[in-house]
Structures are given as structure tokens and as C-alpha cells.
Amino acid sequence: MTISTLPISTELIAEHNAALMASVDEDYDALGRKLSRTGVDIDVVKNKVAEFTVAVPSWGAGRGGTRFAKFPIPGEPTNIHEKLEDCAVINQLSQATPRVSPHFPWDKVDDYSALREEAASLGLGFDAVNSNTFQDQLGQAHSYSTGSLSSTDAATRAQAVEHNIECIEIGQKLGSTDLTVWVGDGTNFPGQQDLGRSLDRYLDSAAEVYAALPGTWRMLLEHKMFEPAFYSSVISDWGSSILAAQSLGDKCKCLVDLGHHAPNVNIEQIVARLHRFGKLGGFHFNDSKYGDDDLDSGSINPHQLFLVFNELIEAELHPREGFNPAYMIDQSHNVTDPIESMMASADAILTAYTKAILVDRQGLTAAQEANDTMLAFQALRSAYKTDTSPILAKVRQEKGGAIDMIQAYRTSKYRERKSQARKPVGLGSGIV
Image (tube, rainbow, N blue to C red; front, side, top):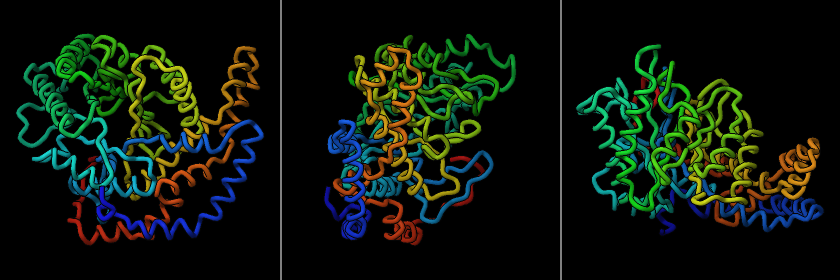
């Protein structure tokens, strides 16, 4: 990687940090003294946080919109090359998002070796590849209107299997090791399909995809309670997901998306259960208020995000064979600049992670074993109340990122520059 390829001037970042460094040092030292009173070395925590990273989705660099309308933003990316450049901005300023998760066929190119080199020149690598059998593409022989991997039409199922295998082949060229499979298959009317036979068809098709996995690859199954199917979804919840993963084999894991659950579901318990059975494969971070809203991570319920990370830390401390979760931001941005939203989300995710590190594990376990409910709760509450922003600011500064990411981004006028250089995106009728 050469510095000249990075989208934001390193001199601008250095000047930005210089103006804020004294305050960061003062806050960091004060927090360090506070933590030391409980036996916590702030530098140890900082070094651990510096190692944590989360992937960003290629599709997240653009305005996603809603089911009803899409409102483009000036300078929005129109191809994978422009998406990579925007993702590089996020990583350069946050120093926490060095991988991009591509989606096919949206991100198809003729030369994937060249695309991999292009990403590397921007300081990026590739994360899990995502297949798309939830919408029809131009020139597609068979429609997914009746489903994809679970369709009643054998030719349609074969087409969906073929596409997933193609994604694996592309992923090998990009250096990926995971395939994420989400299908919109389901029904909108009672009696529309046989609920048992549709799952059988899905499992048979998924088994063909699973059989094509290279030796070191994983297949990550993503469940979703509803949308676009509002009466039933074939893989609707973590129970369906883990049963399918267990049926398919050891290399098949479950992917948890924060928004893909019934209201008020205990997602942190789902994380613990999937880990208990060795099927926790990854996590998609976003937030929701009413349903599967795909809002910015931590924007609605940061406490839940903290509780999820509390279970992920527990899983990390008590790993089971194959525990290596893939972490990715998965949001839709229809009123904000996507770059700003994903930087803010990366900060929220790392904040929750840092707070979870600070939990007094020994005290928590002792309180749990003694059935001391209040002390157990306070062990979590004490960590959650801690302002960890000085740690995150210090991590970003030491790694070459920006102390105040959004301020540095706006100062760079990156969006304004790209609005002049890129082809405008037309009005859309709905999401993606």
C-alpha cells in the first residue's frame, strides 16, 4: 500500500489530531487513574481494542432507501471501484474497518485479481462474499418470485445453487473464506406453500452449495423473521438456522443480524446459545426501533449492543472449536451520508466492545454463583457507565486515524469532491 493511494490526506489527519491531542491525553490519563483503582491497566485494554476490527458492506457505501423511495446523495458510488474508495475513507479515519464484504452480482467485475490488488492499494481486504437470490437480475432465466433455494421449480433451485457456487469461486479470487447465504424465500398467504416441504427443498439445495465449499471455507446462514415474505420465512429464526446448520455440517454456521428478530427478543441469549453448540459464525450490526429497520448500530439501543458484546467476550474467554466470528456492519442509510453513518457505527461497536472488556468477570461470576442478583447486575452496569471514548480516540490516533472522525471527514470535503467527479445516481423506486 502506498500513502498516495489513500483518499484522505495524511497531513490533514495529522493536523486535525494535533489540535485535539492534549485533551485526549488528559482524558486518557484521568480514565487510566480511575481504572487502576479497580486493578485495570488502561494500556492493556487499549491494545486489545486496537486489535478489534469489523467489516463494512460494499452496498452500505450508497443510499439504501426504503421500500418506497430512494433519495440519492451527491457523490454516491455507482460501482465497486467507487465503493472501495468510500470504504477506504471509513477505514482510514476509523482504523477499525479493514475489510469489505462484497455482494454479487452487484459487485461483479471482469478481473477479480485486479480488484483484489485495487483493494489492497487502499488498505483493504475482502470479508465474506454475499449471494443474491432475493431479486431477479437482467437476463436471468428463471424468476425468484416463487423462491430460490426453496422454490417449487427445480430449474430455479438449480439456478440459485449455481449462483452461490459462482460466489464461492469469486470469493476464492478475492481472498475470502466465508459465504453468507440469505434468502427471501417464504410465503405471504396461509396455504401458499407446504411449510415442511419448502424447508426440505431449501436444505437439499443448500447441501449442494455446502458440498462446493473449499476446505477452509464456512457457509454462514442468515435468518430473517419477515420481509419480503410476511406470513412465513423459510429460515425465519435462530432455531431454524441452527437446525439447518447442524443438518448441513461442521463448516456451516449461523449469522446473527440484530434486526432480524421478533420485537423484544433476547438477542444476547441467542448469541450464548449458538456459541454453546459451536454454531456462532458471525454477526451483522445494526439497530431497530419497530422491526427490521437497519438503523445505525447503537443509535436506538446501545445497552443491548453492550449486552451482546458481553456474551461475545464470554464466548471469547471460553471458546469452542472453530470460534472465529465474522463481524460486519449491515445498515441502510436513507437520510445520512453513508460514510458518516458507518464511521459512527464503528465507534458505537467498538465502544460496546470496550465496555464489555471492562466488566469485572471474576466479580460477575462470583455474584452469579452466589445468586446475588444486584451485584451481578452492577458488575455489568458499572462497566456500561464508564466513558471509554478516550480509549477509542487514543487507539485511532496511534493507528493513524482521526480522533474526531466526522469532523476530519467534513474538513476533507471528500463528499463534495466526489460529487463533482462521479456520475450522479438517478432516483430510485425503493431499496437497492
